Amino acid sequence: MGYTHYWYVEHLKGALPQIAADLHRLRPHLPPLAGPMGEGEPEIGSQGLYFNGVGPEDCESFVLDAQRKHYDPSPDGLFAFCKTNRRPYDRAVQVSPRATCTANQVR
Image 1: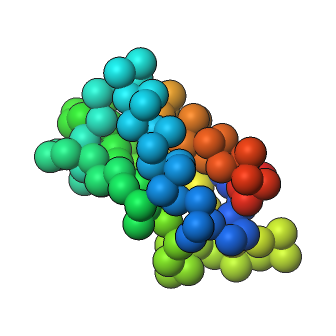
Image 2 (image 1 turned 90 degrees about the horizontal axis):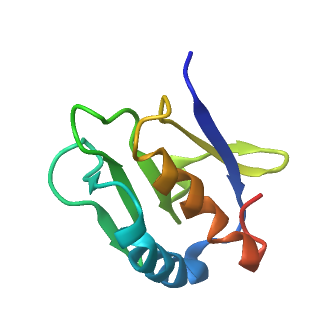
């Protein structure tokens, strides 16, 4: 068990460019981020957000995109989660799904 964030997604595709722009704007105020495997650069763009903490401060990859294969279907929408164990990149995981709340697409 570990510290985990959960969210539900409905229609996300049109909102991804704005979510990516919001995260880019916040990056100077967030801990360092790495690619999904804890190495390299994070992938933050109009197709989705894929990042992790910088190893050894990584845990599970954060994925927010419009590909249904990254979510589990549920009665409340498409379900996703990311376990961070409160590592530094947790702050970026917290703000990324919230960036979509204004579009009422993530709960």
